[in-house]
Length: 345
Ligand code: NAD
Ligand code: TYD
Image (cartoon, rainbow, N blue to C red; front, side):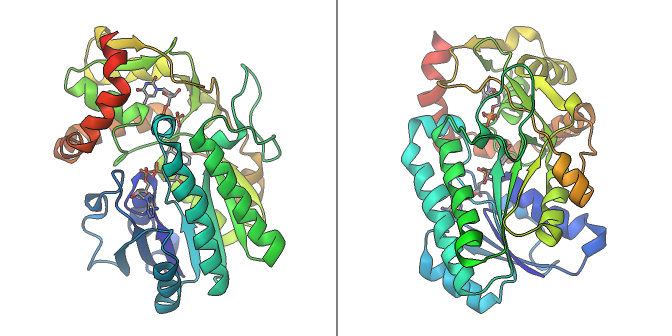
């Protein structure tokens, strides 16, 4: 199958491409991949190092909103399936600049859908998030029929994209599908998200800015478990369906516990934790009921959080030059704009 992977130079996209070529024994050699990525601040060609020349893989730099480029790519490459990872993905940045999220996440998704329909692409998978369901109280889990109640510009724009993808099925009979996953962690994650930010700050003996009371809960899933789910949905998922993907109940953790686990593994003191002013509109708890994908496609998470966190911490220790390069320039500007006053308060 020839797959167009948009956003393939980002965290999850690049892990997915590597997983397909290097780990997915069942389909080894049977897939060809074209990555389309605009290389925004979050995109990094180093995430895909070593693939060119070794596998049936091609990288194209471009924006998913560029209708001419996207249409030409579908035709020239004879694409069979699309997985749309490309997005503005960080909630805190969506507080500072919501329009960027509307442009890529909503407009970009529709441009891709138009081109996919025109080219009669067989399958289209929209990569989405459990955040479209909003926030939970202390109990319960999101199912695919939970109400859509996004609370940030990030999750609102992802919700819009989901609905456009499903409209492609209802209106035009396209084989579109949506997967909604909980928080991912693993190698190559941009150090703005909780786990890589706290690992890299702790390694540099810098404060770990923990929002509010630190008791918000996230359901953590190793990115390899996510990749396996994505491939199953792409190949066997039903048209017009939504599939939730999430961490096991034991992987639902308060942020403060994740923070302690990171510090413990690095042998760093808890005095590095700096409680800071809460994120605006901070969702309290996410938890995902993944019984649909388990029943239909036989998927469930395999990587225990403690094991996955240990290997992730090790990866950041062994790849310091990768994240040191990122933590300069634009990153420093964002860090100061978002955290400067909080950390000084
Ligand atoms: P990321 O920010 O690491 O990567 C996004 C990639 O998209 C980057 O390579 C960037 O250059 C590219 N991109 C951005 N705008 C583009 C555009 N207009 N055209 C082409 N490329 C563009 O994000 P991620 O964490 O890898 O997330 C990937 C997808 O998974 C997103 O759709 C996100 O909403 C979803 N998701 C993420 C998580 C998570 O925990 N990170 C959880 C659930 C779902
Ligand atoms: P994040 O990794 O940004 O993912 P999301 O907001 O999409 O779930 O944040 C995970 C949790 O960690 C969330 O409850 C916010 C919290 N957090 C902090 O306490 N401090 C930080 O500096 C960051 C980035 C996140």
